[in-house]
Image (cartoon, rainbow, N blue to C red; front, side):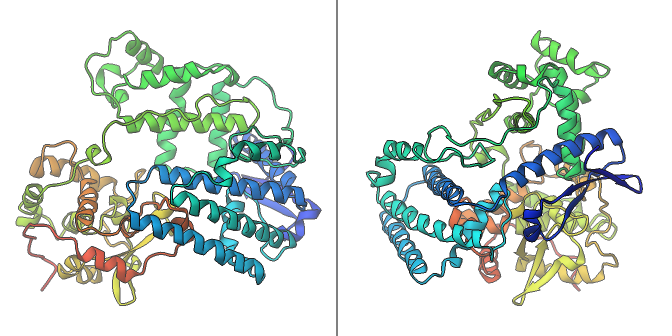
Length: 568
């Protein structure tokens, strides 16, 4: 098969780089492991990845003025759309903030005009890099095409900030918002032959795209759902997109999917199929495959029982789980769309609204719970603390840092660092460690409470690279065995409230920061949440460690902490 090679039993993709691109990519061939020794799986992955790479090569031509113009218009439209969407989700804005926001946008417009005048447009390269990254385009920053694109982006930014200034004071009678139809009309007069691959990005406003698409490879028109699932899984495995836990859960999910929604040609699925699937999930019992009464039954039989109302009064899966399943189905059918198997993804945008407030989905621990915890055997009699020190430390660290269990459990000694004279946790995905999202990699100052309890002294006594050497990595990461222990301990000694679990420490910490009126952006960075502000999230640097440390110092609970066995 073209582009498929093997070495020591493993299969690789090997694609020749077009001559016109070799000076940019600086190599003649691209080579990537397909992560398998199975020839059938390798062929499927090779086909999928080759199509993607050829698509990228088709786009990555030396850009002409028409293409640059089209890219700038996409950037212009996307920026303003995202900004408006973010504003619509924001709470009340004070009059002082309105004036500051308007002044801020006016200042930026003038600043970028000065960059254009002095030919210093490299100062807005961050915007260009963001756009190119989202489009999957590689351009060297010293190339003529990149420099031309940056200058055009700078011109667009001047106009963007002018519009944002008007919007900030509530004036939507501006040129962009008011003359929308005229802009659409002008856009339709442009050259219709500009080639851009990502068709889901809008060109301007809500008009239909006039762009000519690169034709797909000729692909068999009828693909059954189970066949597409195998190709999708092969692509994910080849790109190592799933960790061990995700791979286990998702392989199980996709194995059951054809039995739940039927195994037919993907082009034959309609909107009603996915609506019916969503409705069925609302009736699906929690942990159905673990219940003794369903053991030995196929998923088809279980689905029939649910539809016939023979399940009885069982606790059903949560709204969060339903949406997780819908997201996975959407990703699968987006893959089918990219491969040319379907023209419309009817699952796109399908989700279920959770009527509960975020803070109602899992509860915080109250002061009574914390008092009960710190008077339980691990803390009062130091039960097995010498053997299992993690049982003493991990709840306290979570309570005073908001770190996730997986982040604490996987800590190495080298992750206890000092930054600007402040002891910190370095949360990262080096080696076999993992993080939940890209925002989860962060530096978290260690609370002075934890330091006073002798944490550094404890770490210095550990004769292993891991801080908590009893915790071994399993499918769910390093916290697997601790979770099993804490769930039992929590119910026996702390609370019988099922909404109060280990993750409640994180909620309790965040709530405490909120009550202390800590800036929400500082709070987000401490706990590893994304910042939805384009300016702060994409271009702002991380907060100084001292600022985060001062915020964490404010965290206080009205409880008596246990005496530490780790302090002399």
